[in-house]
Amino acid sequence: MKIVVCIKQVPATGADKRYTDDLRLDRAAAETIINPLDEYAIEQALRLADDGVADSVTYLSMGPEQASEALRRALGMGGDDAVLITDPALAGADEWATARVLATALDRLAPDVALMGMASDDARGSLVPGAVAAMRDVPLLSYGAELKVADGEARVRRLSATGYDWIGAPLPVVATVTDQVGEPRYASLKGIMGAKRKPLETWSLADAGVSSDALRGAALTRVTDARPPEDKPPTERIENLPPTEAAARIADWLAQRKLV
Amino acid sequence: MSNDILFLAEFAAGRPARSALELATGAAELASESGGSAVALAYGSGAADGAAGLGAHGAARAIVVGDEDRPAITYAPAVVAAARDAGLAILAPATPNGRDLAAALVGSLDLPAFGPVRAARLSDGALETEQATLQGSVVTTSRPADGAPAPAVVLVLANTFTPSEGGSGSAEVTEAPAAEASALTKATVVESHEAEAKVVNLEEATIIVAGGRGVGGEEGFGPLRELAEVLGGAVGASRAAADAGWIPYQLQIGQTGKVVKPSLYIGAGISGAIQHRVGMQTAEHVVAINRDPDAPIGEFADLFVVGDLFQIIPALTEELRRRKGG
Image (cartoon, rainbow over all chains, first blue to last red; front, side, top):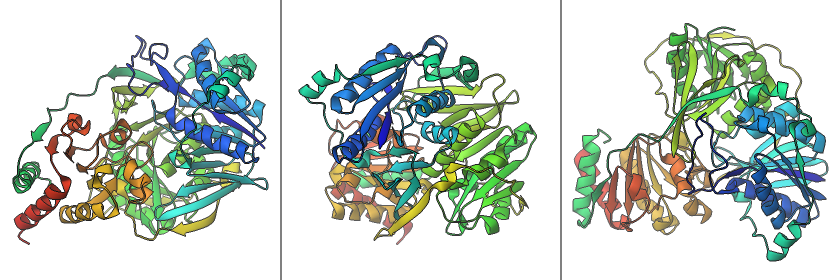
């Protein structure tokens, strides 16, 4: 059973983020990390490998050349090999274009499970996994708190409105997991050293099998403006008051805003 | 291509989700600008009987794509068939089910995707959306690229639109077009487990009282529940409280939980880490109660009360009860 984990390199949580003059996120400017929610997908894949369920774990990423750092970091946690798709034509790729490229590359890698995090830290649309599943015409098992694979079938435990369900589908599948799968492992020093010798291929769009014509300029969407959030009025503070007085002040504040 | 505005209308347990009502009104607002109609794509248990009722909130037409209780993603081929070449935009709730179906639309029909958005409008006849991105540090405005296929897929945050009430209109219910075969229909529920306690849908709450690590334990949520009750709101939590097992994961607010947009959010014993913040930062009013005067939530709350939540919350509940005359 073969797993490909798709990971994204994103700006570090506290990093300074900038948009370029043509309103694209300047991915070269910021300190970068593996998208934190992708680390749970890595952890889930490695647990399946530890348990002997997965025979191989491959990482796949699309991004600028320095995204190879994220792949090396992932290989330091475990897994076998990695593929980076990088191409100047991919600058500013939107969710549709990202899904198109990953779907084509996944057709080539042909995993039983293509595993992804539930969302990316930067864009938060969460549409890439489902779009990839639709493009490849394979089932989607999303938002798993846990993933199991056995007897040619994958299952995820997913929160329902009133409890949880196990949802299953025949392999191959696209699956996404949440932060409930368990804390991602740290890369050991030995792991980091070993990662340097693991195969990491770099593919251009042509290598991945994507024609740049089909990518329509890498985006079906266009950002027309990027700006800081509106200034909020300054925070009002209530301090050093006895609880009953503080409570009365809060009640007044709520009443003034017609919230009670 | 028509100027219609489509929307996904989810039904469960025989009734429409609040998101279906919100999107009906949002689609009707956009359709009045585009010169088209608001069209519901209704799915889930109760959709067949309830679809016409979406007319009261602005839907002119409704297509019932399925009426069973099964994984939402399995309705994708039917939704795709109904959305093909239909309309300017399709609104989807920014919930796990809504995102799954929106993603299938993007992948099946090669459509532009937006969101989750906090506003959508028409500008010079084209869709324009507004979204907070990069953990709320940037607000962007987006449009479909020139020549992009339609409909544009728009994920919409809860409470972006307020459902219109008092309408008596009935949506004209029409047949769903035939769907193509798709592997997306192969997902099935193999086992179902009910939670011990009944849980509310936080995305539907307009007032939320949320507790975090500072609440200290399961019983610490008691005073929060009493306050929520007197306010007519619901109780939520941070990931720390859900991970500790004090409260079900259905009530977790944040990046990996629910994204909520209530008119009032009260956070008690919540420090305000970025992962929590992205789940509630679009609340209209934020009140925080924390013992730590330097808690990050104090930097973005509208009202920050420094003190012991176990003293202040019961006092506030008491005060509000007194003012209500009970």
